[in-house]
View (cartoon, one colour):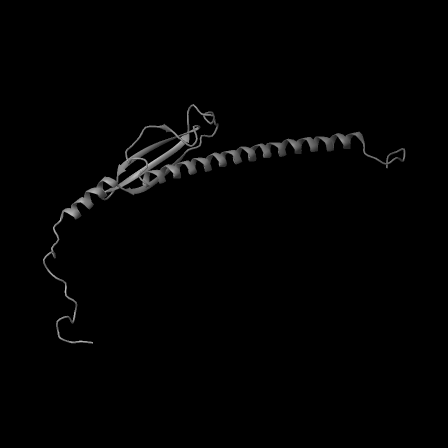
Length: 160
């Protein structure tokens, strides 16, 4: 109670509570802004992963030749670019393939504060090597071309 006997808040209490409310709202709005930015970054990162996996699958399927390329704009999404790098693997006929996806320098995502990119690495069998191996195998003469196969027990006169 006040000196007059009236109930209520003093002006100081109201100003203090408003200051706490405004400070809390400022902090909450900053947290929401950071969360929205992180959500957008995660969406861009997921898109980069999807595009890299698509390109790698096209390479494995033979739709894209297994040769290094320069930076190319993605057919699926012109805001993104991709690059293919091919290195000889540890075994003959095995290639180490790098597919890197990033926002294109001329697209809508070019001015991101935090750059997004994704690189997918995989060993892939070289189709040219497989073709040469198949050719060698088909060119070898068959060793058993004149010999007849006999089954065990054949010709022993036993009938069943």
